[in-house]
Image (cartoon, rainbow, N blue to C red; front, top):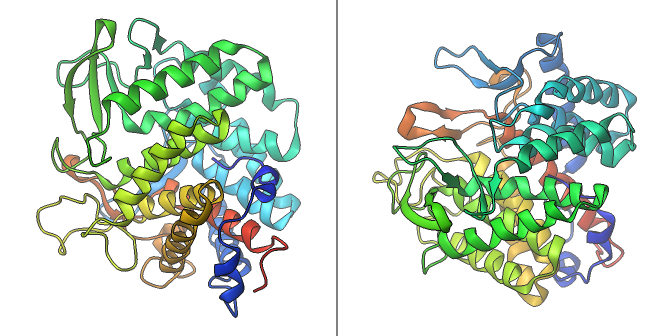
Length: 398
């Protein structure tokens, strides 16, 4: 989820030398947003009422939509806000406002840990860009609903209500909801939200990661925060490195460092980045296979959604990382350049009007394999905005 970019632009730039060496931008951001606008105008025409949100493509090639209670329901509205942020065109603000307000019923949803994705990606970006006072109470109510899933005895936010016989599973994805609670802590003055974030982050750092800084997908907790089992749901195997899971961790600890300035979180984000970028099974275009340990590499599906999340995270992490940030920046540009190429970027009117091809939702569940995914588009647009903001710094002489 894209924070206000101004603090990012004022940070010491780690990649100015790299930027000066370039003769031209590696990516045409204006062109990418123009194409995105054309695709999403078509998407809006096929979804006039906003009751079901674009999600993916069904096996028969038809559009797959989901209700607002689905964990991905905020990404389409969030992408519309990113189109407004780049273009300043009021039509995108109007569309984004409509799709954000559609999520209002989810503010009291206490059955999911995904309210950060659902509410903050849409309404949070809307509030950041417009300060519309109507969004604030919805967001604060939603943050309170999310906080109900934290139990001090366990020290973490509960992800699902049950997983393979365990009653307190926590997934690596859950790190992505902490940015929402940090916002709520600042906005409301309620320190409880901040305390929840730090407790969850510290337990996840301790329990979710292997010595090589790859992460498990699911950790099942018992009373007192005792780890009962480490498993996977969407990865190839319990001990494998599910690609998108690694990027959730990378993004999550980058945000945690931004919000707390705790050097442990920065070190963790850098360790995750290094595991990811130096992995011998990461392809040259830096768009990963769906799991780094999938058995049939190179004949396994790529996951463009993981590449988009990683690119966005690295474009923030590079600004905190001093000289080491050069490699993070360069890797992110490679990822974005790959995603903008015909190998991953859909042509106008194709791909059910989604932007990116070749993502994987959950191969073990035979669900959303080699298809577009709405959150791949969201993080792709976010990464383009971050790249564009860095390029426009005075230190860049492109």
